[in-house]
Length: 503
Image (tube, helix red, strand yellow):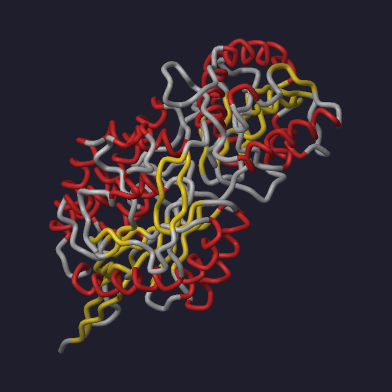
C-alpha cells in the first residue's frame, strides 16, 4: 500500500486543524519506502500535550510488523553496505538539504506533539539537521590502518565495515535530534535502520522518513515502526533478540536500558545506550554569577527540564548561595508558561500526565520533609493538567526524592556546600554519570574538577554542551558508547583485520 503524498481520507478528517495543512504529516508507518498500516489494522492516537487535542492516528504495529521491517532492512543491507562512501555522503547531503528546506514545518509538527515552545523546536531541528550535515562528511573519513608486520612474509591491515541492521529506539524529548544522531552515523557507516520512535512523538519521525525517501535514500535503508506504549515491550524485544539485527541504540530511562541490554545478550549485539542522568551543576565562589545564572536557565529549564543532561542538583558555594538564589529567582520570573505554539512562551507542558504527577509528587515530598520553596512549586491548573510552575527550592537533604531522582521537570534544587572536596564527594555519590557542569574562574580548580567529576561530559562555565562535533555519552549507569563526533561512527562499524601473506 503506497500512499506517499496523501493521507487516507478517513484519518485526514480526524487531524487537528493545527497540523491538517502540513504537507509532511503522515498517518502510516514507513517500511521499504512505502507508507503502510499495521497488519492488524490497529491505530493509536497522537495528542497535543498542551491541550489534549488529538492530532491524528498512526499504526499500532506489533511483533509481525516489526519482524517484517527487520527483514526489509536486512535485505536492503546486502546492497547498501556495498555503496561507496561518496555515494552515501551525497545521499545524506540531499537528505540534509531537504530537512533544511522543511525545517519550519518539522518544528511546528514537533511543537504540536511534544509541547516544547516553537523557538526550542526550531533550535532542535537546526541541531538535528546538523548531525546529518556532519555525518554526510564523516562518511568519507572513516579510517583504516596499516601496521608494520613482525615478519617479511605478510602485510597487515585493519579496515572498518558496517555492522548490519541497526535498531534505533528514540525518546520523545528530542524527537528529531535523537533520530539524526543515530541514523546519520548508521547510514554513513553503511548500515540500514529500523527506527522505533516514542509513542508520544511519532509524527516528527515519519516526516523525516518522508524526506529521506525524497532525497533518494534507497528502499529499506530507513524504516519507521510506530507502536503504542502497550506494544512497546514486545516490539523492543523483537529488535533486541532478532538475529538479523546487528546492533541496538537506545536513548531513554536507565531501567528500560538495562532491560534492553539484557535482552540483547541473547544474540550478542552491539549495544549503545544513552540513559538517565543526575547532573550536578556546581557554582564556585570565583564564578561569574551572571553567567552561572544564565547557564542555569538554559540547562535546567530548557524543554521544561525534560532533558537527560538537565541540571538536576544545583550546588552553590556557601559564601555566594543567597546572592545566586536571588539572581536565579529574578531570571526564572521572566519565564512564561503556556502552549508552546503561542508567542513568547518559554515553558511548555510536561509530556504526559504521568510525568506531571511525578514532578508534583517530588516537590510535595521535599516540602513535607522541610524544603523551602522560593518560587513556584505548584501545577498551573488553569492551563491544564500538564503545566507546572518554574520552581526553585532549597533546604534539601539526602532524604528527599529530588536529591536522589532525575526530576525531568522545571524544578531547580539549590544546595549549599562548603568546599571543593565536599561538593565533589556529593556530586559523585550517584550511579548516574552522564553530564556535569561547574562554574569557576580558578584555572587550577577547573582542571581538578573537570577530571574528578565522574561523568562522561563536563560543561565548564557553559550550560549547553551538545553539538554534532562532540562525543555525547555517559559512564556508570548512564550508558555505553558515544554518539556524535567521529566516535559515533564506531558504534555502527567493526574492525576487520586483513592479513596478506607473500613470499
